[in-house]
Figure 1 (cartoon, rainbow, N blue to C red):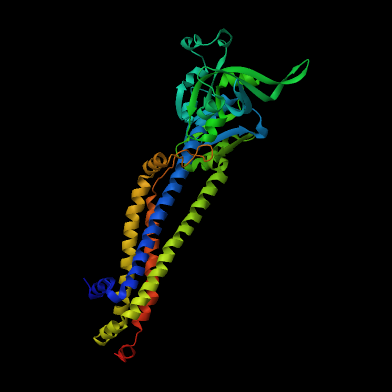
Figure 2: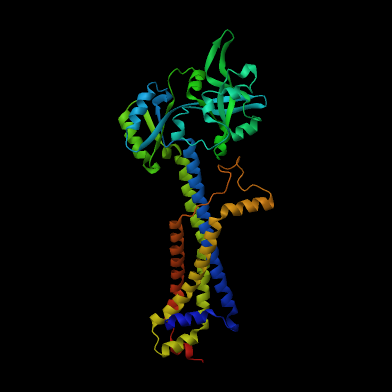
Length: 428
């Protein structure tokens, strides 16, 4: 152990006259501890929020979506899929139909987004979440065992799968009949144009964990949707899943180049650009705001070291008269400031990582004790508080904090190194 480090440790132990200095030192350690812990926890939550949101969005939605220009239907979608599947990086593809409509039940009416899907290929591309009741295959054909439970007038109906929140809002249960009303493509009657209407049976209830999808999304089989909208053998577009989601933009350009006009390929980054850009901006702003806690603690280090330099001017003069150089004196006070920084950073890291890695359990415990929901599903995108530690963020926080602590020691240490022994000992 170098004598500079030994002396700096001795100066950390307060005598009776230096109690106030010790209090400031303790506040500095606590400030750094609080800043580091808060940064780790908040950035873990924001990283987990981004990852969870991306996973849920890319579950229901595909990595790449191919549609025809001017929102026209795709006629030769089988041949288009064959071309798409040949492109390197593409894992699978599935056709889809997209339309907006209204659902009417005995308990109310609500707007809905209808997606027609191929039950054979869609599970390879989309993740529909947890199917709480029923089965996806029932969209094609309702089994005989289920048909026995339906009334005579409902036995000829086809199936529809709805989200958990939609079922709760409309008071719907499995095998209840509902009516879909489409405002597009009305039917001409002697009384004028009337909207398309058709009855379906709820054959499945899914939960994606994403309130917006669970409350507004419904699935039909591709054939049922084509018949309802009178689309013939056409689809709205083709959904595609790729190996590497971060290369989706390159693969989308390759698809665009191969298919040419009138097809248009959009990747998930383009479709959700505003959302993820806002999340990144928010993460950066929170990092800057919480870093101010560490900066305040750094100013406390400067204050404490200046007070120690004033208090120890006699000791510094004696050390210099014994042969200590200016560099040696600087080291003593730099080490003292770094001890404060290292102790605060170390315990802040332990506390931050412990809370961040167990945040979901802690949030559930808090909800249970205080009987309230931290993230209500109808207000926020997610219903649970996600947390995922990004260890590269932790490394940046640690290095940044120690750098700030080191910089805060330079002025007091420099001031101490320039102390004139003769002036300090003149009145002693």
